[in-house]
Image 1 (cartoon, rainbow, N blue to C red):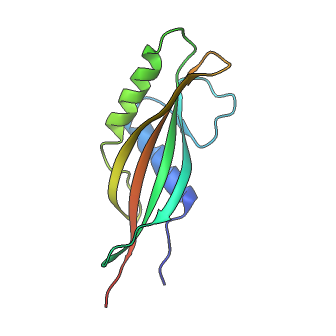
Image 2 (image 1 turned 90 degrees about the vertical axis):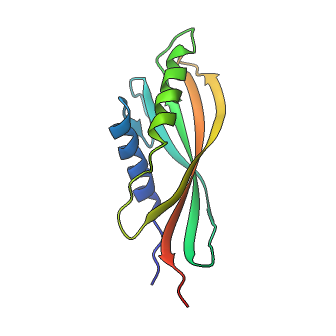
Length: 134
């Protein structure tokens, strides 16, 4: 029986990866957290099977929340650090395997009501969860 990757397992793996590769915490829901930090959220999931593999593509949005400032320098530094961290594959437990991990770019850049700078970057992560053997 094939089992797909659990959504909480995916987000937990992404959070762990970001925290290992950057100097900041990564949450799945930020409630009164002290900036700067990251926040990972699932945007979309769709199957993308091949002739030989069962694959799901997860679109993940990672929020970069910088400390309040008039300048964008802080949020740009968070973006750069995140992009560098995500050039390495997220580690998943067996039997799951990352087939591809691609940044889809900056989705939004704004200033929150709190004065914090806020950027949202997208990533598509294709995960194989089984082989299609005939």
